[in-house]
Picture 1 (cartoon, rainbow, N blue to C red):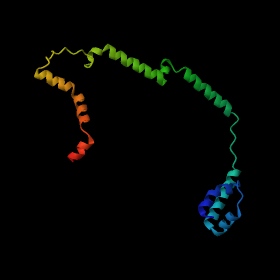
Picture 2: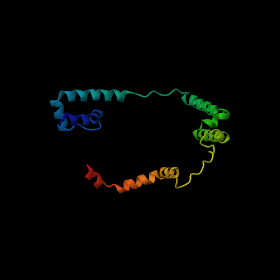
Picture 3: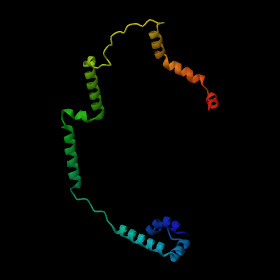
Picture 4: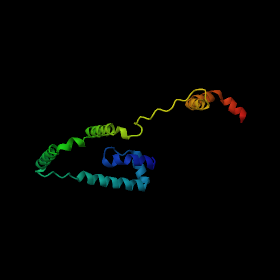
Length: 157
């Protein structure tokens, strides 16, 4: 048996959950580090078996109930803005406030202000043609992308 296998079995053997096999005992006789580690673990387990959890004081339950009542009373008397601490109501209140401010001050936001009507450009003039090309720029780029193929790029390289 290897030391790795022994380390895996040590906690169970030290606590008494598993009985040491003949192979395990022969490894312990040959390997002093593993035997020392197992002896230390057995001493630790023995100390843990002797340990007793302390008993709570007789008035523990009474004091706990009093503290719970006090906390409940604090929660109920938190005041007018206690609902604001709850996230859903708080977020809703902030959203309503923000929309209200935006509605009241809507004319002060430049993106919401109506822009004056621009003069109509006559089609067929150079300025009209340039504006038409600007409006159709994405469409023309898509056509260029469809015209080129990977084979064309490979031949040019």
